[in-house]
Image (cartoon, rainbow, N blue to C red; front, side, top):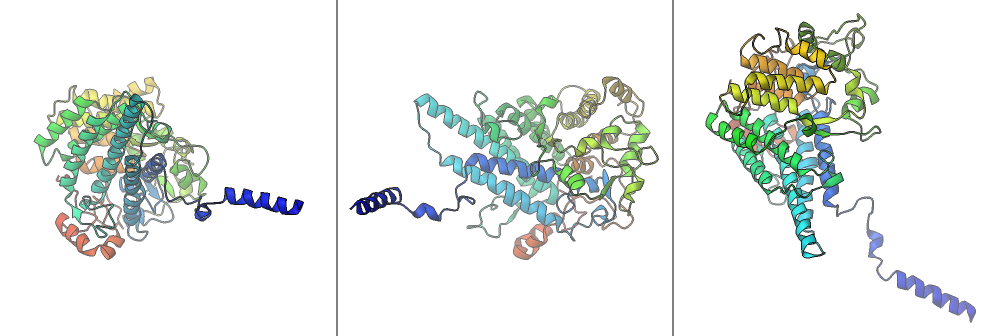
Amino acid sequence: MKKILLFITVFSLITSCSDDITSLNEDTKNPTAVPANFLFTAAQKTLVDQMVSTNVNQNVFRLFVQNWTETTYTDESNYDIATRTIPDFHWATLYRDVLKDLKESRSVLSGESYTGTATEIANQNTIRNNKYAVIDIMSAYCYYVLVDTFGNVPYTEALDIDSHPNPKYDDAKTIYKDLITKLTASVGTINPSLGSFDTADLIYGGNVTKWKKFANSLRLKMAINMDDIDHTYATTQALAAVSSGIINSSTDNTSLKYLSVQPNTNPIYVDVVASGRNDFVPTNTIIDKMNTLNDPRRTAFFTLSTNNIFEGGTPGDSNNFDNFSHIGSTLLDPTFEGLLMDYSEVEFLLAEAVERNISVGGTAESHYNNAINASLSYWNVSSVDAITYLTSSAVAYTTATGNWKQKIGEQAWLALYNRGFEAWTSYRRLDFPILTAPADAESSIVPTRYTYPAAEETLNSTNNLAASAAIGGNELTTKIFWDVN
């Protein structure tokens, strides 16, 4: 009898706890429903990683602008981006791993319902709207990178594989203007009295006021890019961006702080230190320029060579790693931050705006000085050395060599060291510094775009061919729509 009662008791417990056994089929390690915050964080880190990376399978912008060059394997320094299908990786990362996650994060947010008092629900809805704005700002930045890398790209039909498995490519200029419209709208919806993603936001910690400044600064940059083809439009947008509030100190920098342990370390540390490889050295292009200027940032950018001087390798050559300066220890710190935009870059843009007769306030010289000072401070140059550098005849705005494009272009190139994509953009817009393609390079000039991914040529061939024809050919030397000089 006792055995029967024990059996009945145990059976009752089992059935009462196990009426619904469908949960046994759930894969808890690969959930089908992911919280919006997680998707946002993943997209954010992937985006910054891609823009910071030095892995030649992923990002070769530093090689294009001759900040670094390779040692043993020199394909990418000679502008061969097809062998390792670099465009495919860049394209897939931005569309699949960033934009798609951001879209899904927005979708999850839209399905959330809130409880509490009327005030609490209203606040939660305001926070959700702030999150929407931040997602849209990040998405705009991502599309801006795609346009400035490739030209015409999928936009209106992108990210909808069910309805548009082979999306059409939209006109790059049209995308640009739509992105500026969306940035403007996002800024207009932000309520700074409440937050957004809080700790899930690895860049600004949920501070929507700083996201607003970033959005306006991106709007300013895109306007300056367009000035050579539409001065009236560029002027309107630049002035509106400045009026709305742009990045005005280094505390507003759009930066992601990395951690000391992989996989959350700075990608430069992963590619240069943790890999155990000696694949890169700085170029003589940048080191010779900085030596001529006696630039005090050299100690942060580079090590001394075995000859006890700052000495760079020749772009595109098989440079012996031991013979030259190496990447400076500051960049190799695993916790060194990744930047999408900084105060120095914004001040250079303002200097350009003044020279382009856009009345943003101040003088070109004052913004130029602010930009250089911000860069020197970022790299821990002392105030005494900064004054010495800025007042030298080769650097001072009134006496430096060349026209305003050369003065701003060369100093922006130096300040954008370690930000290869933006250094490349500045170079394409201003045509300075003068860079000479390596003798064995795939093109006779520095590339002005990435060629389209090989996968697109195969899987979306009709739309890809139409896009290639529309931009003037799928070549490394085809120019982005705003690059007319």
